[in-house]
Length: 73
Image (cartoon, rainbow, N blue to C red):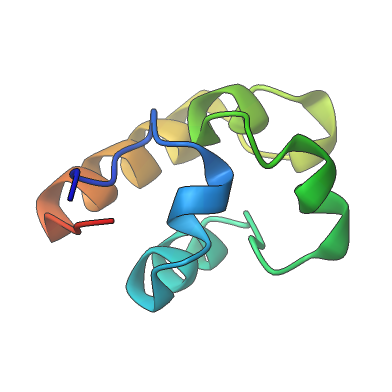
């Protein structure tokens, strides 16, 4: 098992219910079917897309919360 972080593939984060909830809190809905198109991307790369509506502050907060949660995937 590996730690789930902001650099983990979206498909791995989507398998962990707690990671899904953390991401959703910051506007990244991992259960949105459109996400599957980029499921191999990291959450970091996805957050950088203009269409996500995430600013740098939100992305940093998401990164920190995922690290603090110490989730395994």
